Length: 289
Image (cartoon, rainbow, N blue to C red; front, side, top):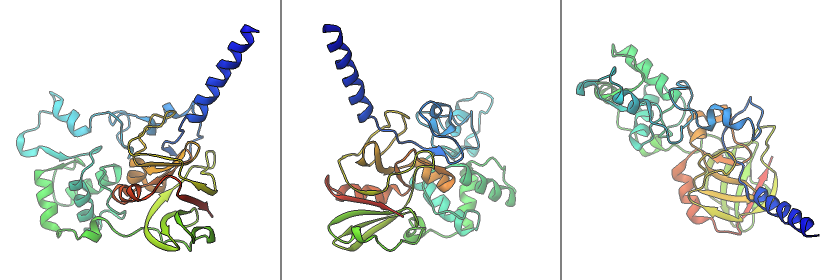
């Protein structure tokens, strides 16, 4: 009997831990999502040196600009100091991307994250203007980009939702609701049937789909890391087990070339930060086609 009690107690603890695990994290849409395969995926924390072409945001790894300046062979002179490079994230990068979009070198909205799309656009600009095509922005490149474009407006820096918002589901028309459409890939924050704010979102892949239905926000965490995939989930608002609405740097960088492991990814960190402050535990979440 004593041995049976120990076994039952052990199983109970293991079950509780499994239920508490949060499984969200970025993945490629073409990959098969599983806990065992996640660590080997480039989105699970590959360093910039190991995957230079990826647009993922590495966790805890130095940016190429930092590793280059630390390398004895690189030894850049102060006149060609890199000020923005792959893996960096800042408001200055958001301005860079807005200016590159003015110059027709980028088609996606500014994200503030320097990934492969930004690197390619910078290389194209440098080649066109006779600059060293490194893909990183040094002082000479930045000055040339500034002189070739105009100061971005607020709408250029943070444009309205890229996707057109879908007609709200009838279940979204009362109370405080995060109304999430899989068809239009948008989230509309609604209060008593009126749209307060909207933002682009993406979902899980076919293998790890985002659940549909009516839910409630169970708990929130401004800073959170997936306990299974060990990827950051800032501004997480959990609504169905380990599935949550949260900011994704991977979505900001790669857009719909990737997918989550079931969570609702948001790519505009500023908009989600404002939404996080407004949403309360218990507010309704509707996920629908």
